Image (tube, rainbow, N blue to C red):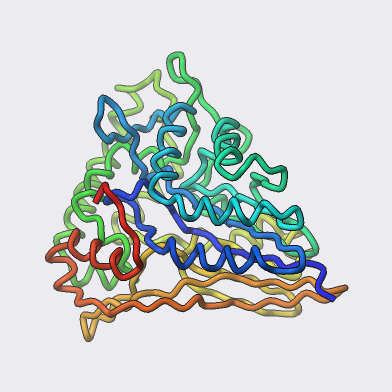
Length: 380
């Protein structure tokens, strides 16, 4: 007899529906959630980090969309309202799901939605979802020998300090985000708006080989930021706690610049070293953060990366075609003393795209992809 079903998906990255929002699969995600809501048995829906893209989501300042590295609770609430307006269907489906007491909804905190540590953000999400008690905000899920965590803490450049989640800046309490997050929000969002589609293309080395202009832009921007972070910002903004001087982080950032390496590093090795006891006690481990599909099934233990729910493409260098990457989720059935899993691919009807045509007019390609998935937004 099925005791419960655990469904895990992550890296959805819902944004404001503008050019920096890479999530358009609202219809598919809602169909999945609506199916889960109808199950007769208990369902734990674990949204494994980066469900919201607060990081690349703007907020309204002086009637204009703006970005800041000094993120207060008020600014986070402004961002959340934009996300809600852009993706109301998803919130409605989640609201239906948590209406049934047997269902539980877990938000695991990632590096793109660290704003979830703000209590008012949690309260607002609960309000959107009907103020139910079966909604939880956690750094990890650990039940029935199933361990689920987003994974940014095993990535040197993207981890944040769990013991010091907030900083004081002037009179404000702000998020103590990772060095990369501070960098992205203050120095790279204009580049994302100029090239909104390129971040959706993988693998990065293939993209870099075929698009030399973006390599030059990223490398030059990175070099300038690296030098300023080392020799200028720590002194110019001496009393600003977000401009700290992380020697080890700067070394790693320099290594990436030198090798034009803009992908995330493998986090599984770091997880196994730092969470050795947790790994040994678990039968199934699900990590996010890395947007690639991965399964390691050894000696009765499984580690899974299900992949991302963003709009992403695999670049075939020979044909110069962009192939839409399917959306996947992990289904785990807990039955008596048995635990069984499947990595399930959610069917989507999408067309292949010409790489050259896409980079020639990135906004047109974003609109085309959104149309194919039935997503509409007033901010594109």
